[in-house]
Image (cartoon, rainbow, N blue to C red; front, side, top):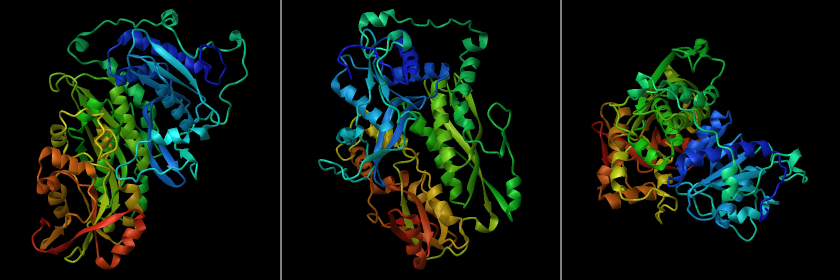
Amino acid sequence: MKKKPGLVRTPLDELTYKVNGLAMQVHRELKAGHKEVVYQRRLAELCRQAELRVEMEKRVEVWIGDQLVGYIYIDLWIEERLVVECKALNHDLTDDELSQVLVYLAATGAPVGILYNFGRSSLEFRRVLRPQPVQDWQKYLLRGVWRPHGSPPILVSGEASQPIRFSVVSPLASQPSVLQPTSPEKSVPVRESATESETKSVPVRESVKKSVDHYAASGVSIDAGNRAVELMRDAVRSTYGPEVLAGIGAFGGLYDAAALKGMRSPVLVASTDGVGTKVKLAAAAGRYRSIGHDIVNHCIDDILVQGARPLFFLDYFATSRLDPQIVAEVVTGAAEACRAAGMALLGGETAEMPGVYADGEFDLAGTIVGVVERESALPRPGVCPGDLLVGLRSSGPHTNGYSLIRRVFADVPLDMVFPELGIPLADALLEPHRSYLNLLWPVVSSPSSPVKALAHLTGGGFFENIPRVLPEGVGAVVRRGSWPAPALFDLIQTRGGVDSSEMHRVFNMGIGMVAVVAPDRVDEFRAALGEPTWIIGELVPGERKVVLE
């Protein structure tokens, strides 16, 4: 990387030149004084308008051997090739910021990245080239990894015994970062840095002032709705299989149900739910994609407890004033979760309702349809006293208790790192709702499955959800301390002064799903899952209630 501006030739010259021009437009439009996510979101929007594929807050898994040790996040991942980092710092870009971009370049295999500082009177940027060899950056990479809840610390000696690998790799990773020097007329002149005078000389496209019709004047923009659809179109279509006959753009989604003819006695299972006030935290943090995962995974788990596999999903997003970028981020997250579950995001609705929602407010809901063989539906006959309750770990609070959470942390910045958490508060609170489909489906779909019943711990926690799968004359005992409750729940209880019973009624306390299994098959069940589980209690004679001991 050169100390002074200079011309180089790389496989991404045209792309970086185009993105740099869009960044100049963002800076001219927004000026200084905003949060980083505001610049990031606007730049992503302009990139999509320029027909560039872009992902915000791209999560890159970090692996050492066969162990997932954590994640790093990229502000913008453009055309699956270019790393872009947006800063809002009113100081010169330092080695710390440059090192961060180098870490992302090493992680993705991208040959070049761009770092923008939107917090100054004029836009400052750096064009950063990947160093060789990337193995030299292992210690820096590990330092920037965000670890999942409850994961052990990463222990690294002077040289790691196994190389780090990543879940995201650029198609250009095998090409050299910098090609042979060339004269400016043979390559696009992209500078490594820009001074204030150079910034002013870059042409910036002025926005076009459009006439406002009466409907727009009332607070509803049809154009914004259409733009949101365009931004999310590719993500939604990526969930389609041959069974989807009509999806986005149609009045109703068409799904070919011919495959159900092969089932003996198919039963459709449907559920509708929402994300609740977790959306307010997502808005405060400027991170919307995770709540798309939340709504899909919550609904998946709600029908999985009846033994159903998902077929298709529909989303509903309602707000006071439509921001196409936010809608697209949410729906893209939903599409990612649908793809992971092997189901179609068949359709949805985006509603702009000023006067119904306060300015800046929005809500998210979804509907899922799945199918199960009648004879395989859960709960199965034979649930009885003596059966054991096996707890499966949650990824956090999932989508419940956020009104209480927001009150407890009302005066705490979302980027604060509590020592007991080890990660920013926003990361702990916005971790997506876990889907148990891929983990449990191979077990529950077997005709000889050891699982008699499943309870999804959502609103109402242990007290309200476990009784839903119990027959008359059967109760349950749940034993506190039989599983390791994540530190986040202890922090909520301590800061909020919440008693233990209320915590177990409001939150999942680290257990997102409970399986009812006969004692003689519990070892078989736990071994089949291949992850830590806990026997958290048992069924007893009595009323359909839960006793916490």
